[in-house]
Image 1 (cartoon, one colour):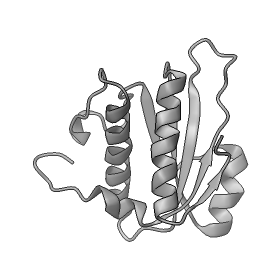
Image 2 (image 1 turned 60 degrees about the horizontal axis):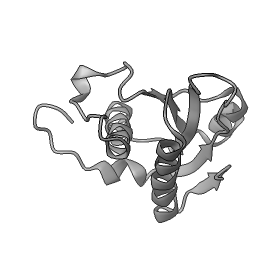
Image 3 (image 1 turned 120 degrees about the vertical axis):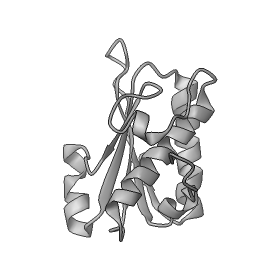
Length: 141
Protein backbone atom coordinates (compact mmCIF):
# COMPACT_ATOMS: atom_id res chain seq x y z
CA UNK A 1 0.00 0.00 0.00
CA UNK A 2 2.87 2.28 0.76
CA UNK A 3 6.53 2.09 1.56
CA UNK A 4 6.91 -1.25 -0.22
CA UNK A 5 4.33 -3.10 1.90
CA UNK A 6 3.07 -6.15 0.06
CA UNK A 7 -0.68 -5.98 -0.57
CA UNK A 8 -3.01 -8.92 -1.06
CA UNK A 9 -5.89 -7.03 -2.66
CA UNK A 10 -8.07 -10.15 -2.87
CA UNK A 11 -8.05 -10.58 0.90
CA UNK A 12 -10.50 -7.75 1.54
CA UNK A 13 -12.99 -9.05 -1.02
CA UNK A 14 -13.33 -12.37 0.83
CA UNK A 15 -15.46 -10.56 3.41
CA UNK A 16 -17.80 -8.96 0.83
CA UNK A 17 -21.47 -9.73 1.50
CA UNK A 18 -23.40 -7.31 -0.69
CA UNK A 19 -22.92 -4.61 -3.30
CA UNK A 20 -25.59 -1.99 -3.84
CA UNK A 21 -25.33 0.01 -7.06
CA UNK A 22 -26.89 3.46 -6.87
CA UNK A 23 -28.76 5.40 -9.53
CA UNK A 24 -26.66 8.32 -10.71
CA UNK A 25 -27.94 11.87 -10.39
CA UNK A 26 -27.95 12.94 -14.03
CA UNK A 27 -29.54 16.29 -13.12
CA UNK A 28 -26.29 17.59 -11.65
CA UNK A 29 -23.91 19.10 -14.17
CA UNK A 30 -20.94 17.27 -12.66
CA UNK A 31 -22.87 14.01 -12.00
CA UNK A 32 -21.24 13.83 -8.56
CA UNK A 33 -22.65 11.17 -6.29
CA UNK A 34 -22.50 7.58 -5.12
CA UNK A 35 -21.89 4.76 -7.57
CA UNK A 36 -21.89 1.81 -5.20
CA UNK A 37 -21.78 0.75 -1.59
CA UNK A 38 -19.88 -2.41 -0.76
CA UNK A 39 -20.93 -4.17 2.45
CA UNK A 40 -18.42 -6.34 4.31
CA UNK A 41 -18.88 -8.59 7.28
CA UNK A 42 -16.98 -7.49 10.35
CA UNK A 43 -13.26 -7.60 9.63
CA UNK A 44 -10.72 -8.62 12.32
CA UNK A 45 -8.47 -5.58 11.76
CA UNK A 46 -10.60 -2.66 10.58
CA UNK A 47 -7.66 -0.27 10.14
CA UNK A 48 -6.00 -2.70 7.76
CA UNK A 49 -9.29 -3.42 6.00
CA UNK A 50 -9.94 0.30 5.52
CA UNK A 51 -6.51 0.84 3.97
CA UNK A 52 -6.86 -2.32 1.88
CA UNK A 53 -10.28 -1.43 0.46
CA UNK A 54 -9.32 2.19 -0.18
CA UNK A 55 -6.25 0.99 -2.07
CA UNK A 56 -8.34 -1.58 -3.98
CA UNK A 57 -10.91 1.00 -5.10
CA UNK A 58 -8.07 3.34 -6.12
CA UNK A 59 -6.54 0.52 -8.16
CA UNK A 60 -9.83 -0.02 -10.01
CA UNK A 61 -10.17 3.71 -10.72
CA UNK A 62 -6.61 3.80 -12.05
CA UNK A 63 -7.54 1.05 -14.53
CA UNK A 64 -10.55 2.81 -16.02
CA UNK A 65 -8.94 6.05 -17.19
CA UNK A 66 -5.40 6.56 -18.52
CA UNK A 67 -5.17 9.94 -16.79
CA UNK A 68 -5.89 8.40 -13.37
CA UNK A 69 -3.06 7.33 -11.10
CA UNK A 70 -2.41 4.95 -8.22
CA UNK A 71 -0.38 6.65 -5.51
CA UNK A 72 0.65 5.58 -2.03
CA UNK A 73 -2.15 5.73 0.52
CA UNK A 74 -0.24 8.16 2.69
CA UNK A 75 -0.53 10.70 -0.15
CA UNK A 76 -4.34 10.58 -0.26
CA UNK A 77 -5.79 8.96 2.88
CA UNK A 78 -9.07 10.90 2.79
CA UNK A 79 -8.77 13.20 -0.20
CA UNK A 80 -10.23 13.06 -3.67
CA UNK A 81 -8.23 10.89 -6.03
CA UNK A 82 -9.11 10.19 -9.66
CA UNK A 83 -12.36 12.14 -9.15
CA UNK A 84 -13.40 9.47 -6.65
CA UNK A 85 -14.03 9.35 -2.91
CA UNK A 86 -13.98 6.22 -0.76
CA UNK A 87 -16.02 6.53 2.44
CA UNK A 88 -15.19 3.68 4.81
CA UNK A 89 -17.93 3.11 7.39
CA UNK A 90 -20.41 5.46 5.71
CA UNK A 91 -23.46 4.60 3.66
CA UNK A 92 -26.55 6.30 2.32
CA UNK A 93 -29.54 6.70 4.63
CA UNK A 94 -31.52 4.00 2.82
CA UNK A 95 -28.73 1.48 3.44
CA UNK A 96 -28.33 2.07 7.19
CA UNK A 97 -30.82 -0.60 8.25
CA UNK A 98 -28.82 -3.15 6.21
CA UNK A 99 -25.64 -2.23 8.10
CA UNK A 100 -27.16 -2.34 11.58
CA UNK A 101 -29.23 -5.45 10.97
CA UNK A 102 -26.30 -7.48 9.66
CA UNK A 103 -23.44 -5.68 11.46
CA UNK A 104 -21.83 -4.98 8.10
CA UNK A 105 -19.14 -2.41 7.36
CA UNK A 106 -20.08 -0.20 4.38
CA UNK A 107 -17.59 1.19 1.89
CA UNK A 108 -19.29 3.83 -0.27
CA UNK A 109 -17.70 4.93 -3.54
CA UNK A 110 -18.64 8.34 -4.96
CA UNK A 111 -17.48 9.90 -8.20
CA UNK A 112 -17.42 13.24 -9.97
CA UNK A 113 -17.06 13.91 -13.72
CA UNK A 114 -16.85 10.23 -14.66
CA UNK A 115 -18.12 9.34 -18.11
CA UNK A 116 -20.82 6.72 -18.65
CA UNK A 117 -18.12 4.32 -19.84
CA UNK A 118 -16.04 4.79 -16.67
CA UNK A 119 -19.08 4.24 -14.46
CA UNK A 120 -20.01 1.11 -16.45
CA UNK A 121 -16.46 -0.28 -16.22
CA UNK A 122 -16.34 0.33 -12.47
CA UNK A 123 -19.70 -1.39 -11.97
CA UNK A 124 -18.66 -4.31 -14.16
CA UNK A 125 -15.39 -4.88 -12.29
CA UNK A 126 -17.06 -4.64 -8.87
CA UNK A 127 -19.91 -6.87 -10.08
CA UNK A 128 -17.45 -9.52 -11.26
CA UNK A 129 -15.72 -9.48 -7.87
CA UNK A 130 -19.09 -9.73 -6.09
CA UNK A 131 -20.08 -12.76 -8.17
CA UNK A 132 -16.69 -14.39 -7.59
CA UNK A 133 -17.13 -14.15 -3.81
CA UNK A 134 -20.85 -14.99 -3.81
CA UNK A 135 -22.02 -11.58 -2.61
CA UNK A 136 -25.56 -10.35 -3.12
CA UNK A 137 -25.86 -7.70 -5.88
CA UNK A 138 -28.58 -5.03 -5.66
CA UNK A 139 -29.48 -2.48 -8.33
CA UNK A 140 -27.03 -3.59 -11.02
CA UNK A 141 -28.26 -2.18 -14.32
